[in-house]
Each structure stands twice: as C-alpha cells, then as structure tokens.
Length: 196
Figure: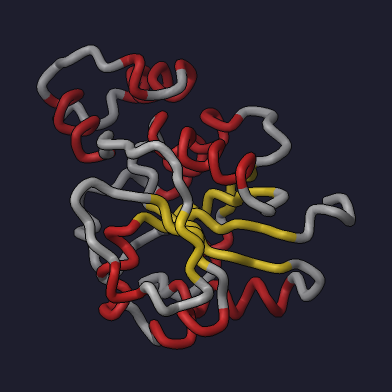
C-alpha cells in the first residue's frame, strides 16, 4: 500500500452477491469524497440477517474480487473471516485501528443501515469516533441524525437493486446478466448459485 493511501472507506456487506449497485455507489464515493481507497469488507455473518441464505464466505469474497478486478481504488477484504462471529462492526474497527495505526478508517453505509444503527453493538462509539459516509436509500428519513457532525451525506445515485432481488430472480430462471459485472454473473452460473 502506498503511503498516500491513508484514508480508507470500509464498505461492509454480505455481498450475497455483489452487484452493480454496490459498485456504482463505491465508485461515486471514492471519486467524490476525500477517501483514497474503499475496502469491501465481506461479512461472514451479520447478526441482524439470516445466515441460511448466505453463500460460503470464500465464494462471496471471490465474487467481490471478480467484480473489482484490478481497480487500485478498491480492495476485497476478508478481515472479518478471522475475527470472532457473529461480526460486530465496532470489533472490526478496533482491530483495524490496531493493525494499521497509520491509516484512517471511515464507514460507508446506506441510510437504511444508519436508521437501524441503534441495534448494533456499541453504536455510540461508532457514531462519535468515526466518519460515516451515508448514501441515500429510497424513502428513508434520517433527520434524527442531522446534528451528528461525523455523518457526511453523499449524493450518490439512489440504487434500488438488492442482492435479494438478484437471488430471487436467478431462482426464477430470469436472465439478469446486466445487474452484475460479467465475471460475477458467469461465476454464479457456473457454480449454479441461488438456483434453488
């Protein structure tokens, strides 16, 4: 990592699977904010989500790697694979701060995730100690957070594509090739993911 790549945005997600919505948002944020690089942190198990529908961790990591290719501004991270599960964002942040003391870490999240942050572990520590780049989600009002100076609202395009829509569509034998990078779609087809 070069010395100038100090300002890292952490984009946490199941990425089950990663799709063009994730990539467009990350692309916008890395180009229109002061972040140098975005790490796609593949979460083994979000405590607020059902684990049953999740692909194996390494498959989802591979999909992220295929999606970002050799883009230097993006990185796939498996950091949470080595941490205790379920994954709590605050624990991952503390671990990264210790492991990479010279880097500055910020969070990237949708307005819907911010809205439910009080269900997270130690939300007040996250909200007071980290910059959070928040991208818009349809019909989500987050005015209750307007006094928090750590929140940076990002005018990224609103993406109404969801991983659950993609999984459901594949199950129903729909061709949704243009919702994902070509290599991601091919890998999903070859492995017969989400077909049942």
